[in-house]
Image (cartoon, rainbow, N blue to C red; front, top):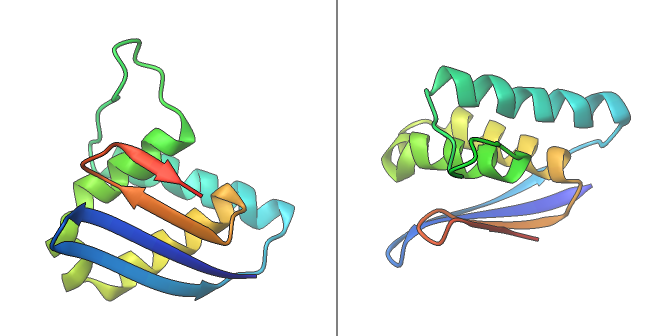
Amino acid sequence: MRGTVRIVFSPRQEIELDVDVQPAPESIRAARDWFDQEWERLGCEPLRPSGKVLLLDKILGVADAQGYSGFTQDQQAVDAFARQAVLALERPRITVDVPGLVVGY
């Protein structure tokens, strides 16, 4: 599957990537696990007062923690993020709007 991931950090800071992935049940689970691990590694905090953390929250949290400069300085990290997002959400087009706290597909 070919996918496009757009990450918006501000009106002037945006990254868009095209990725090719092979969705399979094990790769989808691995992508979700990747976001769990990155969430922990980066020390992300829950967005909701209840403390409940959904997959979309993890995607937003990881993008926010990496930041525009982090992603632009580490092509491997942004490529991994884009591939894992397409697999985890099973969608070909994803927009991660960090300031708006929205993941759209």
